[in-house]
Image 1 (cartoon, one colour):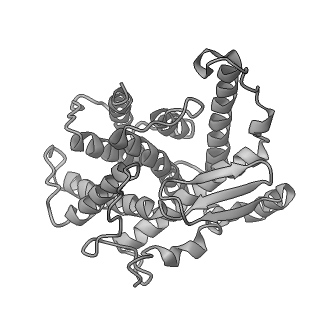
Image 2 (cartoon, one colour; image 1 turned 180 degrees about the vertical axis):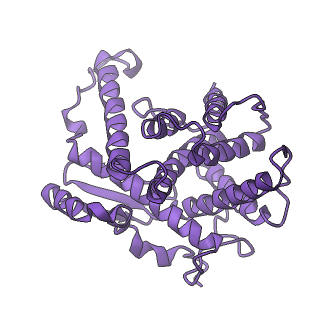
Image 3 (tube, rainbow, N blue to C red; image 1 turned 90 degrees about the horizontal axis):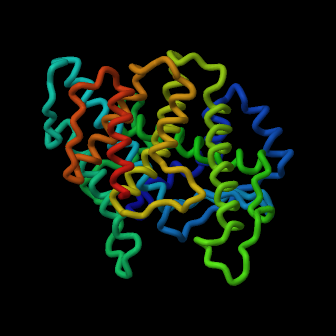
Length: 322
């Protein structure tokens, strides 16, 4: 396998993931893409997360390099979820999980590498960011019941969810060229024009989030396997943002909703009365892991439901910005 391109075999699936994630809407999607003349551009230079729609030509840009770290997160989180679920099924009272256990350590080491790379991205000397040769990696021949295959599936679901967000921007006509222009000579923080533009952009991001989630989840019962797979993909995209922000100290600009809000509201909207749905446990495990790695130990023993647990953890993530 090419050491320099560990996820190269997945590239051919990136754009098709838009249709593959919801095949029942494939014809409708193609009509939408054709109507808006949407095209896709590949960025193979930037090391950071790159997904954006350009209203000038309705193109959507996909950055390749950060996708290695998205796959690594998918693998690590699936590994963590499987490990903790098995432990809890064997002993529902267990509260102490050994993340050096061989059953989960490879995934945790891969996550540690991912976070380390992301914290170094802004340094003048980035250092070696190549995939560690001794850690799990994508495998084109992975069997269906392997963690590698599960990571592939979750990875592509997440890419599809993010791309649908960008398609939503195009479909909804979100065009920064229509925004109020900054007032000459006025500091941005004091300029009402800038404030109004930021508020409009914030609304656009929420609208695109909702458009993507509705496209993927509307019409599916919450017990449907397709629902769980798609909502996991959506959640992973927001978890990628939130955990990266916490570790790097870099937060999105004022016209993007906080990632922790996006996690909760976009899940809650589609399962308003299911505080015990498995997606809440998945999100809770991931958030708890990252907070522990930062030396934070939120008390969650009195939480009645996984959703309540997630709420408490998201409060901790929000406080990490302060």
